Length: 150
Picture 1 (cartoon, helix red, strand yellow):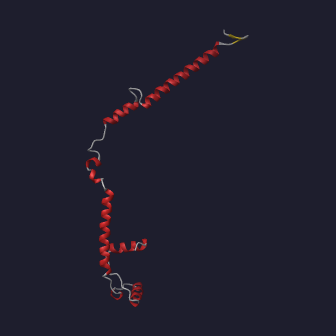
Picture 2 (cartoon, one colour):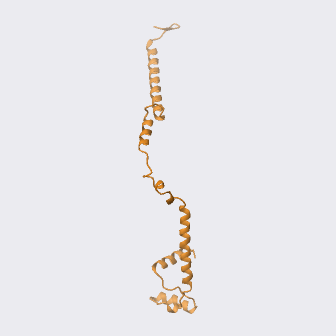
Picture 3 (tube, helix red, strand yellow):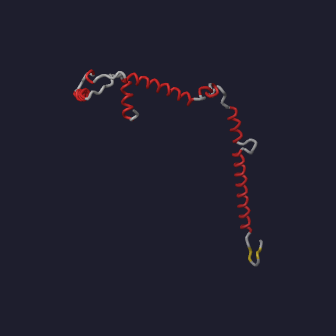
């Protein structure tokens, strides 16, 4: 048995230290191999296998809508602005024509007592009224009134 000074030490403590060192070294080796595998530094790592698999399943030009028709994606905002501008011009022309179509309040048919009150007051004050309109024109007018855009 080894001795330290006057005391005897058991060899069991030495074997415990050796076993601990072996376990630590094995853990470090396994974790190093795992890290290298995840980083793709090994020749047959799972990362490299996944890369080869994804390269084998690459997307071709048949799958890409941009590559099929790139003009569809170019200048989208400009085309949208032009379309909005054309719509605005058409609506403003329609509004200018509508302004000349004002009718007197006396010509509007009255269907209930509220119509009688409103159109009677408009007739008394000589205020022209917009003519009867389609449902689309009515919804547009209400929208503009509610959002205070006109």
